[in-house]
Amino acid sequence: MNHYIGPEEILRKKREYLIPCAYHFYNQPMQLVRGEMQYLYDSTGKEYLDCFAGVSVVNCGHCNPEITKAICDQVNTLQHTCTIYLTENIVNLAEQLAQLTPGRLQKTFFCSSGSEANEGAALLASLYTGSSEFISLRQGLHGRTKLGMSLTGLSMWRTDNTPVGGINFAPNAYCYRCPLDKKYPECDLACANEIETIIKTATSGKVAAMFVEPIQGNGGMITPPLDYFKRVKSILDAYGILLIVDEVQTGFGRTGTLFAMEHYDVEADIMTMAKALANGTPVGAFTARAEIADVYTRPGASTLGGNPVTAAASLATLHYLTKHDLPGKAAVLGKILKDGLTVLQQKHPIIGDIRGLGLMIGVELVYSDKTPAIKETDLILEEMKDRGILVGKNGPNRNVLAFQPPLVITDEDLHRLLNNLDDVLSSIKI
Image (cartoon, rainbow, N blue to C red):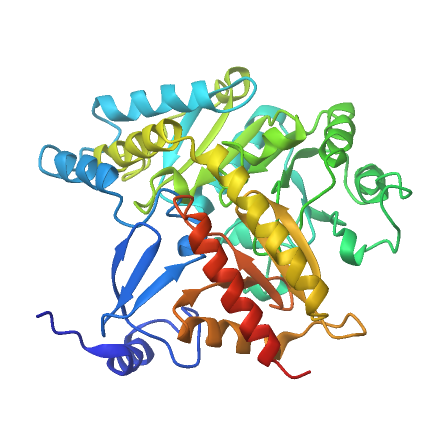
C-alpha cells in the first residue's frame, strides 16, 4: 500500500518552500494522488468526479490510456533534443494544427505554456505590423508574465505594480452586467463599437493587435453574442490591426467545436493555444497565417517547446479528440448540463445567470439585489468536494461556478452533478 504524507504535511511544506502566490482551493483540501479519465482519487482512496479538468486541460480524461502509451513510448525512445536538431513529431504536429485550425492559420511556434504563447503572439504581431500598442478586453486573462499580466483585465491577476504601457482595455460583452448599461440586441453591440473609439482617442494609432478570448474563462465564463466578433473584426480590419485569439482555455473540443472561434465564424490572424493540446503535458503554441509568420526570421528557439514527448502527447490527443468526436460529444452533453442548470435556476434564485458553450459553462451566483454571492460560492465548492464532486470558480468576484469537465464525462455523471448541486443549493441559507 502506498504511503502518502497527507494534506497537512503538504500544506506545511507548501508554506515553507513555495512562493505564497501558489494558492489552492478549499478550506479542507485533500491530497490528490491518482486520476482515471473523469475521476480523481485522494490519499484516502476517496473518488471525485472531476468537473474542472485541471482548469480545462485534461479534455481527453486523466491518464487516458492511449495518450499515456504514446508518452511512455516516446520517453523510452527520445525525450529531448531541442529544436536546433531535426525530429519528426514537431513537424507532424505543426502539420496537424494547420489542417485542424480554422481559416488560413498555417505556421506554428511551440513553447511550454499559454503565457509564453501569448508573449510570442504579441511579438509576432509587432514584427508584422511595425506597431507596438495593444488592445485587450476587460476581464480577460492572458498570462502570468510581465506582458501577459499587463494584457490581463482582471485586477486579482495583475500582480505587477509597474505594468507594460501602450495597452488599452475595451469593455467586454458581459451582457448580464453590461459595462455600458445597455441590453442586447437593442444595444447594437455598443461594447464592440467602443473599440473604434478607443483606437481613435486612447492610442497613438499604432496598434499591433487586439487580444480576445472567445469565452473569458477566468473572467467568469463571459460568452459574447454570436455576432459580436464579426463586428470586432470589421473594426480591426479597417485600422490594420491583427486579431489574436487566445484559445488556451476554449480550444480542443471544449465548447462543442474544435476551436471556440468556429461558433463565431471569424478568422483569427494569430491563434494561441496550450492546456488541452497535450492533455496535461506542458505545452504552448501560437499559429499564424503564413504571411504573418514569415516575418519572424531572426533565430529563435524554445528549449522545451515542441519536444518529442510533448509533441507525441499532442498528436495522440488530437487523434483521440477526432476519433471519438469529443467536440460533438461536448455539444450534446453541454446542452444536457445547461438545460439541467436552467431547471435549477428556476428553483434556486441564487443562480443569477447561466452562460457558456458546450462543456464550458458558468453559473453566476447572486443575492436578490444581484450583488455577488461570494461566501456562498465557497460554501458550495466545499460541500460539493465533500460529496465527491470537484467544481471550479472564477470571475472578478469569484462568484461564478465553473463547469469544465473532461469531455469523456457521461450523461450519468452530469445527472449526479446536477442532483448533488440541487441538494447543496437547497441547504444554502441566504
